[in-house]
Image 1 (cartoon, one colour):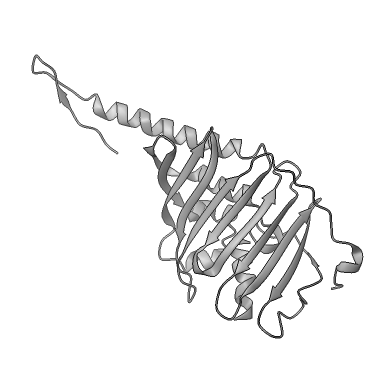
Image 2 (tube, rainbow, N blue to C red; image 1 turned 30 degrees about the vertical axis):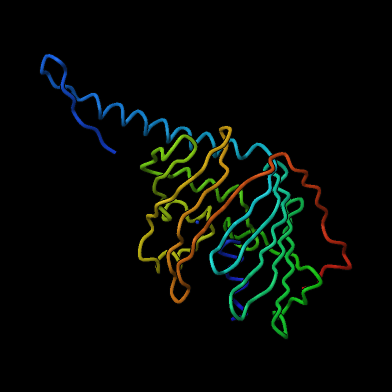
Length: 244
């Protein structure tokens, strides 16, 4: 069960138309083009909102259902960021802190269970290899995860500030940190999603991550806020970093 905390962080670390009759009795197909144009507008709006997210620093909250919640700050330009995962999974309750400074990722894991996690004492940091795929523990990036919406299909307006559609994990697995093995164990890779836009920028993104083996499905709910928030992070002092 102790492995679950690391696995959670690694994984984290997710229309038509009708005819109308004129007064003279003729029929037109005006409904379908109008619907198609509105859907095109929704697709363009989502793409623009996702691109806009890349421009400013922000705070984020990522809900992982019963597994816990991740909060953090990030600067898409400098790539500096810090994320804190509070795991609530039975047998793996604890805190994982990820800090990215100048392209180097540091992690600190503290389990509430007696004995902790081998290789982590809950107080000192470890330096991680960031050569893995996006979304994994060594290369977690909340900004890149939003880019999984670039492959969205069937995008349509729900209301003035919300769109819905479908993402295909086979196309966006890299951004969401989903490995090939996990992808192969999912019953489906095409998932419905909903996204909220505000002032032309993405502010919320949610979908249900399918079950993988014994790990049940869970609701992935990411929110972005406080744009322009300061991200003043420094690497841990050498004395606070564990040797390999």
